[in-house]
Length: 253
Picture 1 (cartoon, rainbow, N blue to C red):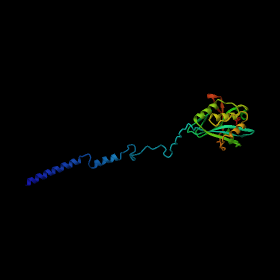
Picture 2 (cartoon, rainbow, N blue to C red):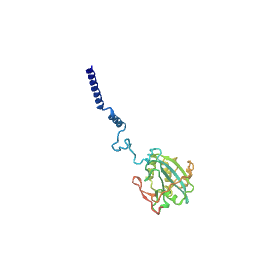
Picture 3 (cartoon, rainbow, N blue to C red):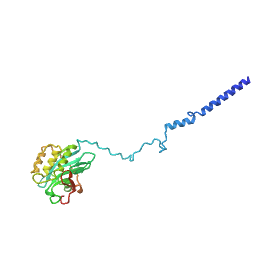
Picture 4 (cartoon, one colour):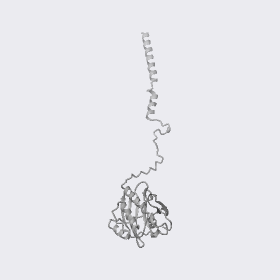
């Protein structure tokens, strides 16, 4: 009987030892298993061990990038036909505001985004300077300097990319002025018509007649002309694709 009990205890002891050894060697039990699970849930970023889930940070998180303005080829610029009384007769010119998110070309002039440019022909007042022809931003500078902008009549329309290209083509190829035929009224009316504005007869003798025409085409209220700096006033030199710009001389101003 004693031998039987001793044999039973020996077998039981051997079984318990085997079970304990098997449990200690298992890779999915005990502390090792807990460590493995924790590593899967919280992977360590070797580049930043203190912040294992560190996303890419923008260089300037407090200064978001300016969103690009989607280009609409049908709304490229605002075009204005403007006349005001200048000494003994009206002066007429065209004025553009860039509506795109990039530079645009008006004649030979590059107009930055959000900026404006005025274009007109001059003769008498610039004869002692750079001579008769096309000038850019002359009105913007003169109006800002002396504040003379009386009896204004203004027409406005939004021009497409194609319209503006047509206006630019006309400007580039018509760098001229004379008192009767190709004066400021003729030039400005032709620009307006090229840009798709309601048609105006380009009266060549008296700009005052063009002014009367404009009154029948729903003029808008007076607009505020943005001032130009002295170095932004240019004279167009030459015609066509080879036309260039030079800063207007002091005598032309």
